[in-house]
Image (tube, rainbow, N blue to C red; front, top):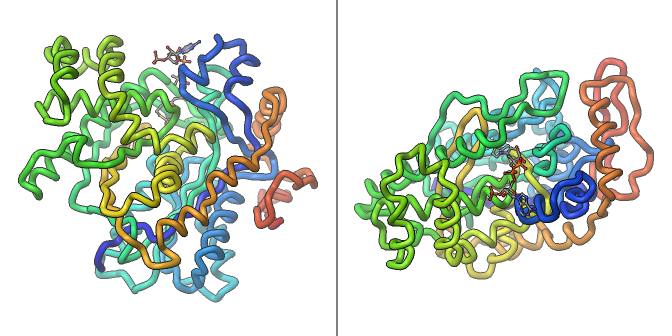
Amino acid sequence: AKDVGILAVDIYFPPTCVQQAELEAYDGASKGKYAIGLGQDCLAFCTELEDVISMSLTVVTSLLEKYQIDPKMIGRLEVGTETVIDKSKSIKTWLMQIFEEHGNTDIEGVDSTNACYGGTAALFNCVNWVESNSWDGRYGLVVCTDSAVYAEGPARPTGGAAAIAMLIGPHAPIAFESKYRGTHMSHVYDFYKPNLASEYPVVDGKLSQTCYLMALDSCYKRFCAKYEKFEGKQFSISDADYFVFHSPYNKLVQKSFARLYFNDFMRNSSSVDKEAREKLEPFSSLSGNESYQSRDLEKVSQQVAKNLYDEKVQPATLVPKQVGNMYTASLYAAFASVLHDKHSTLVGQRIVMFSYGSGLSSSMFSLRIQDGQHPFSLSNIDNVMNVSGKLEARHVFPPEKFVETMKVMEHRYGAKDFVTAKDTSLLSPGTFYLTQVDSMYRRFYSRK
Ligand code: ACO
C-alpha cells in the first residue's frame, strides 16, 4: 500500500467548560497563573452524562456518517486511552455495537494504554497493519479518548477531555513518512495511576516536565539520525513546516520548541541565526542535566525561538489551549488545530509530531501532506471537524459548578446502581450519553 496515513479526522469535546482566568481567581492563585503561566484559556470537562465511552461512540458515529463510510469497510479498530473504566473489557468492545448493527464483527484491535501515548500506539498499529501482509484492503480506525481530571491542587487546571477518531488507509492526504521515527522509552514514576479506586493520577509535576523534555531531546536526536541516514543530509527545524507536540498545557509546548531550537544550536545547524547563536553561546558548555535545570537557558531559548514558534507551532495550539489536556487525544487535537487553521496551504508540507506518555513512552514521527480526493480532502476534513463551530457552541460554567461536578464524578467513579440526570439540553444532537449503570456495573448509553 502506498502513502498510508490519515484519510479522515473527526473530533469531539464536551460542551461544558470553565474559563482558566475564572478558575485562577476561584482557586486563589495569583492573577495570570493559569492563563499566562500555564498558557491555557479554557478547560473542558465531562459532566455525569459523558465519559470516555460515550465520547468515543459519538466521535466514531459522527466520522462514519459525515464521511459516508460503510461500517463494513472497517477492518481494524484501535483505541488509545488512559481512562480506565474497566480493568478487562476494552472500550473497543463498546464501540463494536456500531459495527455489529451492520453485520461486521470481523474487526481486529483492542485498547492500548500508557498515559498519553496510547493513541500513538494505536495509530502506529493501524498504519503498520495497512502497510503489512495481513492487511485485507479495508480501513483502519483509531480512536483516542480521555477525560483528564486531577485532584484539587496545582495540577487541576491542566485537565481537559476529548475524543478523536482517525480513518487510516492508503493514498492518504496525511501520509506517514514511516522511515523517520525516533522513539524513547524508559521506567520513571513521573505520572501514574496506582490507586485503582480513584480516577486521579499521582503526579510529580516538575519531574514530569523534565522527563518530557529529556524524552523530546532523545526522540529528536534519533529522528534526525534516521533522516540523515536516508536523506544523506542533516535535519533541522527548517526541514519541517509545523511541529506538533503533545500538549498538557501550552507553556510546556513553548518550552519544547525552544528545546528543539537549542538542540539545533548544539548541532551547529543553519536554522539558528547569528544573533541567536551569540545569545545561546553561554549555555553551550552546560551538561545535559544542568541544561534542564537552567531557568536562564529556558528564557533565552524561548526568546530566540519566538518567531519560529509563531510560524511553526502556534497554529497547533488552538484546541489544546481551549480544551486543556486531552491525554491520548492531545497531540491529535493539536494536529487538528493545524488542519483547521492551515488546510488551504498544507499541500507539499511536512509536519513533525511528538508524542509523550508518562511512565514513560515517547515517539517523534513525520507526516507529509498531499491533495486528497473527496471526501478525504483537507478542506472537507476541516468542514467535518467544525472546530470553530464546536468551540463557539460551548457553555461556560462558573468554577463552583466545575468543582461540584468533579465531586459528583469522584463518587461515580467505579460506582454501580445509579441513573444519570435526565437533562441533556447542553448536548448537541447526535451525542451519546450515559443513562444508567446497573447493579452488575453494566453501562447503558443513549443517543440524543
Ligand atoms: N502570572 C504569570 N505566570 C505565572 C504566574 C502569574 N501570576 N504565577 C506563576 N506563573 C508561572 C510560573 O512562572 C511557571 O512558568 P515557568 O515554568 O515558565 O516559570 C508556571 O506559571 C507554572 O507555575 P509553577 O509554580 O511553576 O507550577 P505549579 O506548581 O503551578 O504546577 C504544573 C504546574 C507542574 C504543570 C502542574 O500543573 C502539574 O503538575 N500538571 C500536571 C502534570 C503535567 O501536565 N505534566 C506534563 C507532562 S505529563 C502529562 O501530559 C500528564
